[in-house]
Image 1 (cartoon, one colour):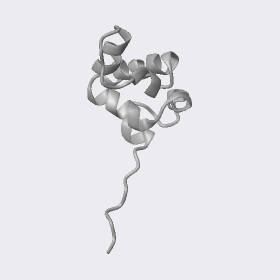
Image 2 (image 1 turned 45 degrees about the horizontal axis):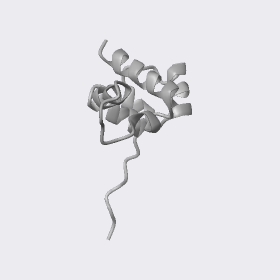
Image 3 (image 1 turned 45 degrees about the vertical axis):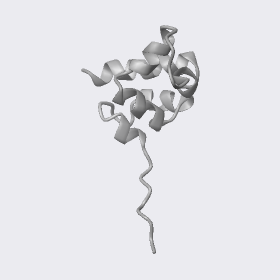
Image 4 (image 1 turned 90 degrees about the horizontal axis):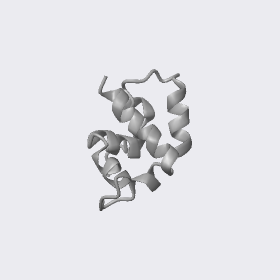
Length: 83
């Protein structure tokens, strides 16, 4: 019996608005994972922004983004993906 193939989330799948050679991808990879960025993009940054506004959240988004610098970069991607 074979299981369904596991599809790993890649930066190219998450950051469709970026050129893969763009330095933003390498910078984000220093702080977080494509899975975290995909989840932040999926909720349009609401959870991460709520935490930065000191509102209660179910997840520690800032930590998952690699800290405050990573969180800022991820929110910049939310903005860039809307253009």
